[in-house]
Image 1 (cartoon, rainbow, N blue to C red):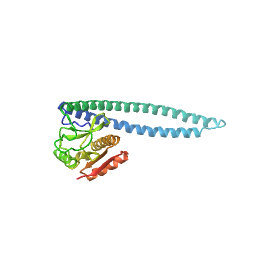
Image 2: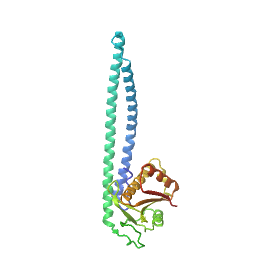
Image 3: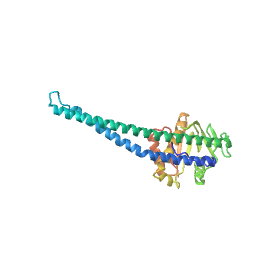
Image 4: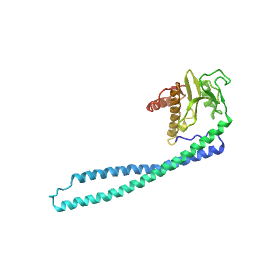
Length: 270
């Protein structure tokens, strides 16, 4: 699961619980790293033993060979059997540890998704939906609805979204579909047949450069873009992503192409 954002619109209790869950997910992930490394080492040992078994089979003495050769071959075979049995026990134990780590992580993921659903339910009670054109600006187009979003946590980010999309801060365009977690998907705007998303990374790039959480945050953004693009493609719409960072726009363009995401355009929009 990607980082379960603690939305500022949710209750403080849910925000705190989500952050605690995320810390526990990171801890479980760290605990699983040596277990996964051990698995690679055991696989290497297994391959080495398989090579020894092949060598043993090729060196089996003929029935006419001296008895001493047959005894030596049988001794090698018994040693390989014992070592193979011991290795298989280690592999079984390691697999059990991996399964335990995966089960613990999945439990935390499920708990986090349940909290996110509770938070979204809280927001749904307090936020309504408005039809196209009812925002106190011009009709911005599209056949869907403009949905209240409760504002942006960073003023600069909200200014950037307003400037690019023309949609007032606190509103977004609701897409006709759900994301991979079954949640409503809302983009920042809609224009000329394209749902629009704005990604302002400068000057908030520090967290994305963190070696621990940066890749997770980037993967989360990519997952969100992929979900939106698939919904748009299925409904005959295009999908645009505007980044105020040249390097990030290049990165997302390349990564979405690797994922074979169709119908998406990524722009550098300073």
